[in-house]
Length: 564
Image: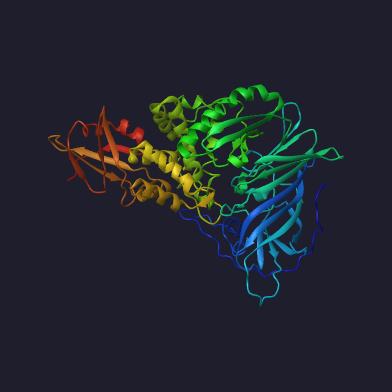
């Protein structure tokens, strides 16, 4: 049964003037819609999400969705107007509050401004838990090239059966369901997700399956429960002709339930390919700490697109082959030893889903650490040199087009270098720490300290500096906020008894230490913007071996003429 309310004729709400965010470093001006989407507007303040109860009926033939979302929230200050996000061409039919009253609303640039009824203006405000229920319907934006463009994928499998999925990172969950669509506010107590679909198919979402009920109209309703906080873009809808099997992993927090959902004709291929899951999870628990969602289990779900980090329901569409769509992103051969989507998208359970950036401009927190998880996995299974090769190899994908950190408050990501360049930055931090036990404790500490939390880049940067005992602020500024690659310049004196060196093409105060190695002898130097010198020794002489240094550091090593 499709859930619809009566479409209200809305009275005018007071117009609000917004200050539009401006980008740094280019000429693009952002629109009011960008600001509404990316900012904690005055209409997003004063209420904190406790739980979502999402119910949808999917009409596959008409590519439409109808349903409701109950938003349970804590009111922390008096709210006159509430911003609910739902993108056109989806439409809200009606909104009912917890007293049964119908609320007025108006649409403004993919947001819906809801006029709240809070009683007498003279009454003293008392924090409380409240609810609203939103009835909505529509034909959501169709993803043409998921997961990059975002939306709903309406596809068919090779046997002609419907194969439906969502992918909405970037574009936002409000492309298919109404919510407070901002990374900074996750439902503290998770959500219930109810999906009605044809009874010949299976509907899969996040968390654990609680109940399946059949109707006499040829449909079934699948009810899924998520107990942990979840970021909006990680909420998933999958419908197809699925087969399934289960397993368990004896993990750091006890028994972790594993479940796999694949198209029925891919069952045997999946059983073979998904044997990589347990070694991957053990590796990541070693480096990052316990899997963050034991209560919700771990699932891999086959999708009609490449993949996505859907929390406790990881999307998989890599064709049951190793590499990234059958190729090695590092060009070294090591990336063909394992399935990129299994490893990378599962790594996001720690960075992206457990630790979530408050603003999409800080997506390097998700992608940089997750990209580095590939390096850690490679090292665990094929050795340290393989990990070094892989990390060096992925640099070929770095563009250095714009800074990694995007523009705040307008839902604007930075460069795709948030993957490969940020991973190499993390590797340089590891080299500086020069103690893998300590480095591992930093990674585990991040996941423990910011467990199920949303963060800013400053919090992550500060934590790493504090726990390592080294001020990495200039390093973060260099690699996250500029496109400059530092140059380690050096020259020898006339007698070649001393080597002189300094940093060039760098931010003020750039302080990255560099280990220069010659067989088993090594020395750490910390260049500055002014020339420094060292006596030539077995350790410092290899400074001229640029390729060996550059393999471990994302820098350029360059011999220059002697300073005058």
